Amino acid sequence: MQYFSTFAAMLAVAPAVVLSSVTFAIYLGADQPGDCTGEELGKVTQSIDGTGGPEAFENAACIQVESPDACCTAVLYQHSNCTRVVGSLDGEIKASVLQVDFGCVQVSCGNVSATGSR
Ligand SMILES: *[C@@H]1O[C@H](CO)[C@@H](O)[C@H](O)[C@H]1NC(C)=O
Ligand SMILES: *[C@@H]1O[C@H](CO)[C@@H](O)[C@H](O)[C@H]1NC(C)=O
Image (cartoon, rainbow, N blue to C red; front, side, top):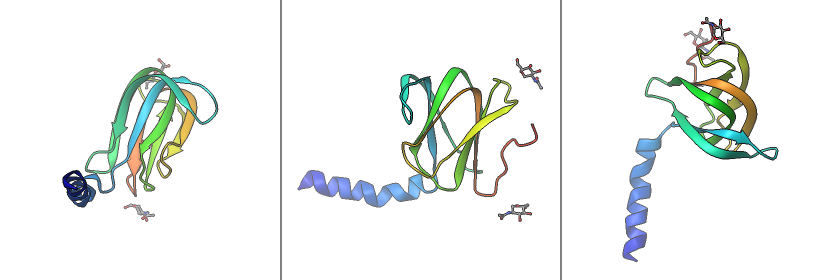
């Protein structure tokens, strides 16, 4: 019972913290369709102003929604200097995956435009 009430208390507090927060996990490998594999290279989360990154990754091949937020999208660039868009992953559905080789990730949420200009 004690455990349960502690858990319930955490639940009550958590939403204020995670409100409108998306996290994408970046992986070294792409396995079966809809799945990432291999080493996790890192995560990208949006900051308070609604954008996350841009962040460069070496040899990234797969990105997955870890913590969903329908307002957020991860834009993937081929090069580590964040040029040449190769795809984007909607942040709406937890565990959804995009398999593509990329070198940079930029997250945008709501009406905040991504790096965009490139
Ligand atoms: C970004 O990196 C790519 C690959 O290294 C290169 O071809 C391109 O010229 C770079 N662009 C800029 C704006 O630095
Ligand atoms: C996003 O912001 C721009 C500039 O502030 C505005 O012109 C545009 O209408 C907004 N779009 C939405 C969907 O709110």
